[in-house]
Image 1 (cartoon, rainbow, N blue to C red):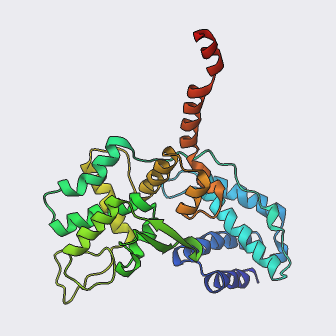
Image 2 (cartoon, helix red, strand yellow; image 1 turned 180 degrees about the vertical axis):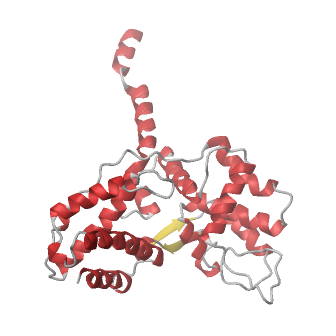
Image 3 (cartoon, rainbow, N blue to C red; image 1 turned 45 degrees about the vertical axis):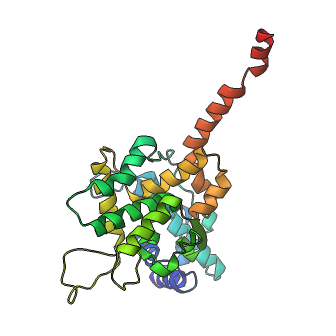
Length: 314
């Protein structure tokens, strides 16, 4: 039965592929939606999945409304289709008769607009924790370290939230992080990030293992200190963006974009940035073409027509 096969696939992703819990939740959601559609269409076996069914499913997704009563965005539709593709690849690998995964085409997406900080906005944002007067010195040091670390490394918020003190090598100013797909990658600390983390850790007097913890006014006997959650980090990033006078929405991922943009503007090649971000595919990193476009403009202005200018000057 299709339902059982989908459950087996999800177990395979968990055990054999070692995907994170958040990724598994996403796959489960997308495939449950497909299962509901297939069942309503009288399909309950993998070998009954046809190209016609996929065509009708894509129409269904395109007409589906989200909680705000807007149609699903193309990238959200593609998340559903990518999950379905992976399911069909699993069927093929395990000799379960079904549709070829290549028959599932993705929706054409609009080019992504990348939001990032630079210049004065970036400086004001990174300094913002030190300007807040209604929080303790320890919280200000912690939050400054979080912002500097996000910008220095391009970490995903989930990767940052999982960090423990022993993970960080301040002496070498580098450490290894486990990212998506359980893959390890090396990241580096800027001098500012290194100094901010050092100041924060020296001010702490607890023995908790997590790098970033709550310092709220709570009864420590009944509510022990715990590592900050990704949601808590998202909230504090938004708070300091407002404090810095930045009107657009700023998230931890904005800092990840800022990290990549800063590297490319400084002359880094896109393949190296791909490795530092932990992208499996260069296609994902190519979202930063806004930076390379600016560099191309500078190259054009510096070198185009140079021989003609030299001729006129001679």
